[in-house]
Image (cartoon, rainbow, N blue to C red; front, side, top):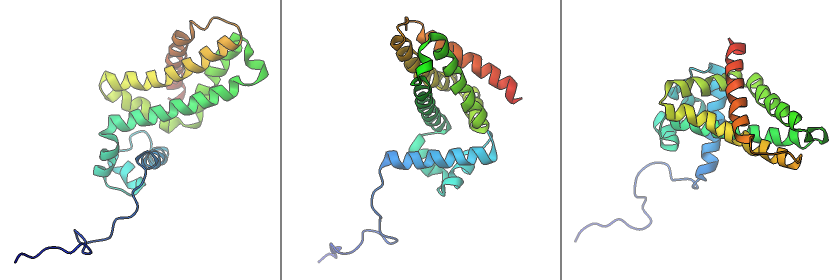
Length: 185
């Protein structure tokens, strides 16, 4: 007669599994930890240092983001979302109805982000520049597309033509990237 495991015996030794965590919630926590590490260490923070800040190993970080480019993409998407929220708040004020004010508010929100998060901004830009063109383009596109949505919506509310929102958004991001690079140096 062969020996069988009983249903009540654990399948492996060690600590019992805790409750399964929501993957999106866990990714958000890992992005929070990565941002903290980048603020503290600077834009050259390694994946080892980012994992250590989160209290995990590098393979676990890779399992959530694939590679450093995946982490950079996730951070840039988060920044784009935050910028969009800031821009929408700015554009909700009564004085923001004029097209010129819409563009001014958009530039101001982007510059305020760079000023308040210089290390995170440097990390995103430097990481994008060190990676294949796909990553570099993705960082700029995520932020530009987010700005284009806010800008287009505000221009329509102001009764202005919103057709130029997308090229204006990319121009704003390019101009601000160049100006910020100069300013940060």
